[in-house]
Image (cartoon, rainbow, N blue to C red; front, top):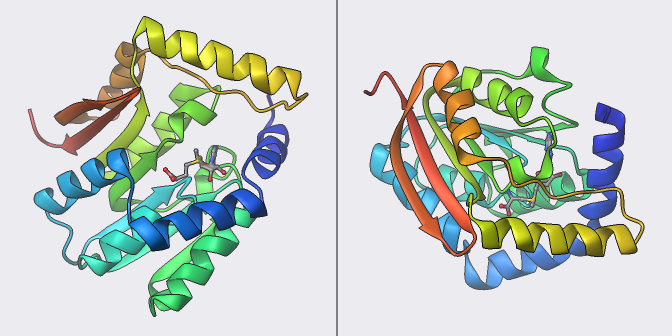
Length: 216
Ligand SMILES: C[S@@+](CC[C@H](N)C(=O)[O-])C[C@H]1O[C@@H](n2cnc3c(N)ncnc32)[C@H](O)[C@@H]1O
């Protein structure tokens, strides 16, 4: 699958209506379950003055919340222009537009221009991308201190759910697919970049994993 195909599929899947719905939910209820777990873990590890790379940030919940918690600045890279517009609008509304740069596109295709950051996050993004080693490779090599992931658990019932979801997408003639990458393979790809696991928590079909550089 080429990067152009991936961006087109992401644009169709994560459109303006979806972005408006997600943003409205965030404004009403704040961060959702697994995002909250990831945010708590990152805040506990320390975010004051940190730089953040939020890959596939959606409407920007992670960077809005970490900037509020004292992070110095953020870069959000997203394949959906509708989500970027929603995240940017929310940054402006929260008075933090000057602290965030927005990049539109497939982070793997744009790897050469993706900066390092102390904290890198992929919240429910690994499941959107077929080439997991490439995606994790870009994210993990950019993380100078912490890498936070939320991605599907490696259990038979989650894989079964993903198969049903993909059958539904196929019936709708949507090219976008969801991927349940094996945990051992994701973990190996992160470790290859020199990070080790600091925390792992399961919640429903998701797992939240935080990696740290220089920790053994
Ligand atoms: C399921 S949404 C999650 C959004 C947000 N992180 C959250 O948890 O609410 C996946 C997001 O990742 C983005 N995305 C998927 N693959 C990407 C890639 N290769 N490069 C950049 N963004 C990507 C999509 O456009 C979308 O905004």
